[in-house]
Amino acid sequence: MAARGPYAKGVAKREEILTAALEVIARQGYRKTSTKELAAAVGLSEAGLLHYFGSKEKLFDAVLRARDEADVDRFDESDLIDKLTAIIRHNSDVPGLVQLYSTFSAEAGDPQHPSHPYFVERYARLRESLADAVRARQAAGTFSPAADPVLIATLLIALSDGLQVESQFGLPVEPADLLTHVVDLLGSAGGAVDS
Image (tube, rainbow, N blue to C red; front, side, top):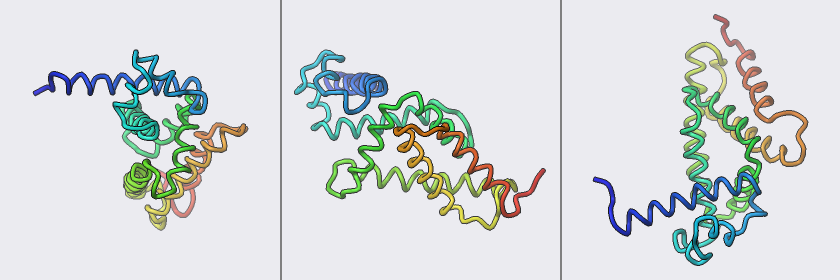
């Protein structure tokens, strides 16, 4: 049964805010986007906007979660390693969201930061899913069976995040191309079987 009444309106308004925030931050960047501007984009006061999230930090946490959901829906690659590469390629077109992610991921290293639980859960989930993708490639004979799937997954996450941070400083090569190169090396190193 679909939600009705004030609750449904609140959920719809929250979704509208997140959609607008994704668009504005992608276009202008995290530092150049104010909550006042986001509020105006959805016809609210600044206090009205924050009412839906509780604080500016929780708003941006929700934006990151919405970005993750949109990325999962946007790309239909069945192999998570290929999907990660596609997401990184897409992120070149939304530098403001990369800036938001890299800023919050650094700040959320503090366990007291409101986004700390989001990043802990996100990294654990992504690490396990990527490890499964490595195992699938090992079973298919395209990755070395000697490689530790969890270590490879951890390295792919670190490489992905690091390249996207570095891209904000004028990386001369597309981050997705570099990730693809490393994945190709993993596939050709240490006994991967050619079909």
